Length: 197
Figure (cartoon, rainbow, N blue to C red):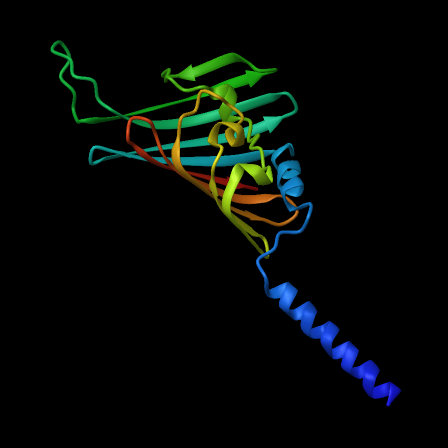
């Protein structure tokens, strides 16, 4: 009788464990783990940004190589061509390319055409993963998805005014891929894809 009772208790414990593991509950320190990954020094990563605005699609690619306090950002940025009466354009899109070296938060070297981008921010992943910044957050094995409630806090910059922002993170012991989707204040939809490794 005693053995049957122990087996019964063991079965209840196993059933409870199965139910709990099937629930979409984040481990207590999961957000802290993601924040730690965000602070890691990644030797290199790429960023692909696709912007759709008023029916036009523009693509930009960035490759970041980090070495201590020094980052080299190679860029290829697609922009709409400015109208000029003196120099007619060959097409309605222009691709601007070059590279920038950032050391200790300052641009120390620039090669190629200049573009209006804050390169000091591109070299730094620096997202803030705090539970209170997200809605509808979901953890599965090696994956995190959420709608971002506090975009400025998540991005770590109060100048960003993004709407409808979502994030998808694939990770192992470090970030593997991050996809951000959002709408700007001007109404453009943006998808930014980070690939690490």
